[in-house]
Image 1 (cartoon, rainbow, N blue to C red):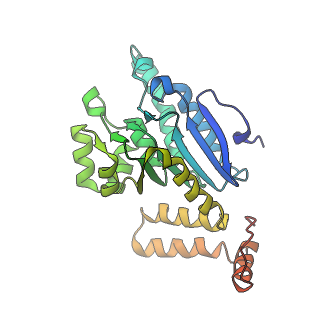
Image 2 (cartoon, helix red, strand yellow):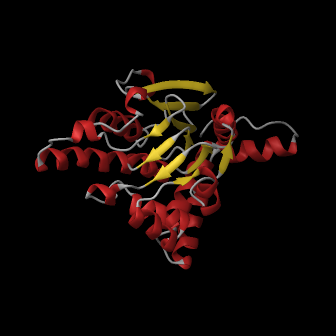
Length: 268
């Protein structure tokens, strides 16, 4: 199976800043890293591949090139003059891209290094959690353009910040800052711009040092449990838990604890 982390992409930069950690950088800085068709295809291809194999990756940091923008949303220059059919065809790619992010079994941390507008805000919401530079700005401006969020924004934002706050943000289209994003629950941590990537990579490295099967199962239990009753969620959690009992990693974790040494998890 081809390793998607070992190839080059037209709109993405791929790096491995630490063991088992992948850094993905949306790389269209001249266009404020706006989401064009090719970037949608590149993100879709990369993140869908993790549903088949992890390729040795245990945590992912997703960021934007430069300091100005994380992702400024859909590329309106490319979209100008699009036929209805072409618009819908492009948007189908964006929908599949977001599902690839949401369904990725490997945890994804968004490192929001600047403006995250429209689709950029939706990409943030599709990640497992987010850190943001203090100067970062967020907005879902679609209603000011005659459309509405269509890449998960109405769903992920409401889950992150609550229904009433999500309605205010989406229906006004007004921007908000990193501190507000953190206070509302969209962002986990705010850092100075120069410290953002180091903080995100440090957290990704901590996750990557944990048992990878445990991390994947815990992420899935949280994600799926949100759509279940408490009773069903508890039952699902035990099914996820039981997957780890026969693993070598479970035995290694207990042995390492008792032998007072770091665990060496193999994902088996």
